[in-house]
Length: 99
Length: 208
Image (tube, rainbow over all chains, first blue to last red; front, side, top):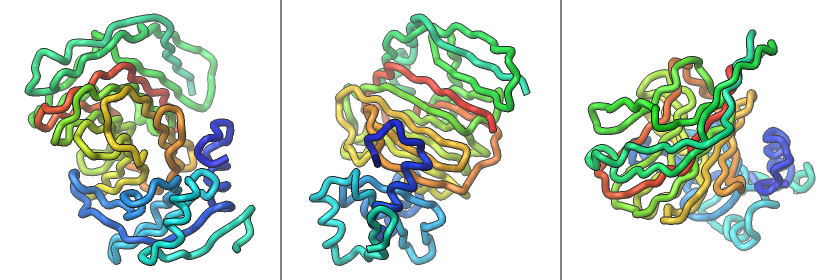
């Protein structure tokens, strides 16, 4: 499952992340330059396993929605993400059901 | 459409980038397997090609000092891109090795970048669209001086996955598809103060 299961096809792995994940919104940092590309703030702050759909990047408002794979993200990091007041929790899923 | 397969079975040394330290500071290339090409005459709907770089590789020297090897036979995009590197000495600037599987021009492409500058995450997958860069995937691991395997894949659905030392570091879906004018591998040494050993570098690319 998630990041460590090499047998799972890529599409299935992404589906699993969305069925057992935390969908969040955070700041989009960076200025788009070679030295400082646009990137989700969580890339800097938490060592999670993420899935990013590029259509979820809002360049105008400098925000980005991103999935955190609960199975592949260390529990301590996942709890920090959940408790970070600067991160908006959109939804959380367990086995495909919204919790 | 005919299928073309180039497979690698034996050994070869990939070297010769160490003499001009102003261009690439100490890119000592370790022994690699020798490329032996074969052509598979079976017909399929895809063209599949595996490349390996060796001592005969001709690198293009660019005005900014970077070196590129252009893979221009086909506009590849889907496939697997792999590099094994050891950054024996990190530096303060942005030296890096870039795998650029498909590029439209200098302002529109997608790359995997392996960096040698201090404190930077490596590897990353970066999209450059209309001259603006976006990090799509990052290992979350800071550059160090150990040997590492870097790999990323793209399937036919626009899904990417990044691996570091055989472990997936994340996935993304990217709708942007540059018009396929060329693919290339680039060695970018901005100030020459980090040192890379490129131990192995290959790509298995499939034309859509």
